[in-house]
Length: 235
Image 1 (cartoon, one colour):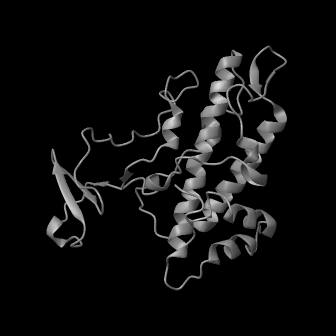
Image 2: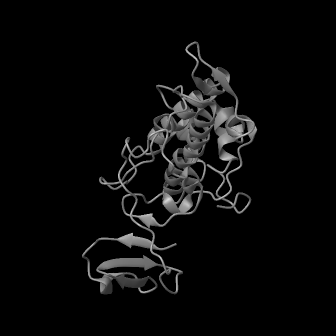
């Protein structure tokens, strides 16, 4: 997976098996690419609430495609292409445009049904907490940008019509993948540290002195696309 770097370090100092491409003043590196693609993906733009408004035409399913790794977003290449929304943890996200439940508010607006909304909010809180604990004492670029929270994309808000409410709900649903992938990034970092065992990340979550996660929930997480790093769950 190619990476885009803005470093001025001479390319001759890089690893001998690292392939280096220079295009229009930008340096790209890869361990497996033989050439640059015809169209180089742009650097992701900073978060802008105006551009990301509920009525925007952005295709949020871009979040479900493998992205190039930029120095600000090193977790991009491990975004799963086919995340499976099932099981006790992610089953609440298993909705399509036709199945996502929308209800009417007292003032005639539309919003994700309360029980689903609460399930999503609980899942977001748990994944956010896990990401924070997994990132403890781990290296992450100071200029790095974590994924936006799903709530930022509007699933907790009401909307003027049902179609917009569905669009916003599904956009928020897909953004959960970014949050989950950020957890995977730190799981991988911990798993491949020489002094850490493969199960250390699970014990970190279950033995936290302030807010330990239930063991059954963490075990279930380890079997999903978040924690299963085997070929059984392809990226």
